[in-house]
Image 1: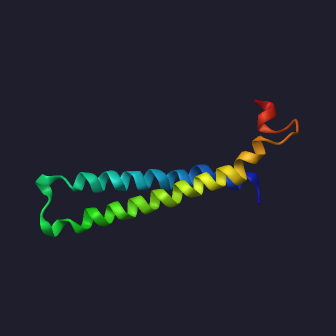
Image 2 (image 1 turned 180 degrees about the vertical axis):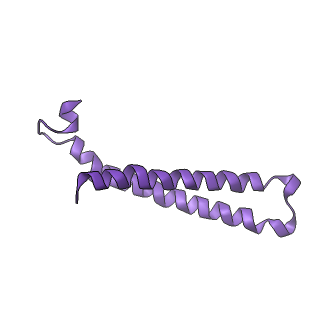
Image 3 (image 1 turned 135 degrees about the vertical axis):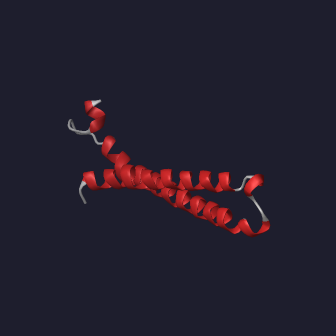
Length: 87
């Protein structure tokens, strides 16, 4: 596949999922404040926290794997046009 596609997946798609998961987790924690919490209202924030943790974990592992095995080797190429040689 084209390098631009993998850079897009690594940076934009997975990075966006990480930010969305972080925002969901923050919203879930805010909704767990004692003033607004009763026994019936616990399910929503806890479910939101579970979705946030799973979203961030999958996106972070995807970022690590695509960065380590797909994107990073391009910087290590021993050709004059590689980003490592340009930097």
